[in-house]
Length: 321
Image 1: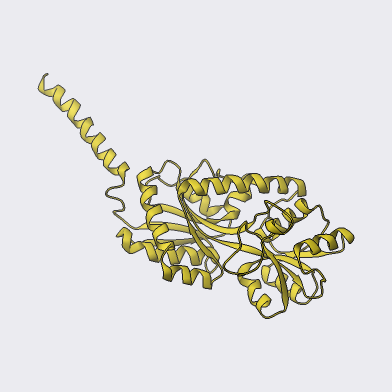
Image 2 (image 1 turned 60 degrees about the horizontal axis):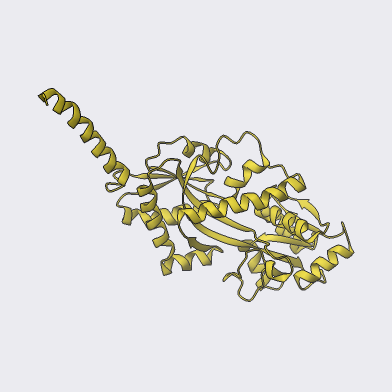
């Protein structure tokens, strides 16, 4: 073979070898990683910063949290980023539920992202004002059926877990409970405490203290399994509505087509951190449970929730803010 032919074959081979090395993730990461999350100071921000701090040392590079306005912007930025593992996303249920309620979302939550891991999850808690006579889920359903359109529930953002849990309950139980809309979750809880609304499928952190103080009565949690956050409290699924499931979750994503080896490395470090005893203790203290799991489990969770909630959203005609 002539010398020039040798050069012509060896250069592409070298390029291919370099490409395979990059795709394998052996040298990843070689620079800081940017982690986008919606809004400073909220639940997503806490999870993003806590995990970023915990995985920076094992990865050998700093993971920098980049807060963006809540909504579609974080997902839009990450969906268009290079699939090299240096731009990641931490977002909650609304990230994959919003396209079911709004047109014009500039990304597909399934096709445009590579899932990494489910970070944390928190149940919603079905709580009633102490003036409501029902002391169980079955009793509440019976009361609602006896008084159609009389009982009401409070919720803030349309399409949030508090709203969707209530609408799923109505859908599965066949009851008519009226929604009272509030601008913020804080005012909805305040109204429930004052007896201005009868019940709520509240997020765990803001309602648990009032359950413990006796100002609210907890009937059940919305997850399929009982929660360590409320020991002894039954699930709605085991209390008359089999299959009922709603939670508030946060998960990590990378742009679509990120090499599997890089996804695997990120998943390994995130899951390892979530399993640490000190991390678990801090997560539980803030009202969330660390989850972890493989990327495939996150995909299954998202697809299942989109199917389940899609039916409720269409039946109730819910449109997002």
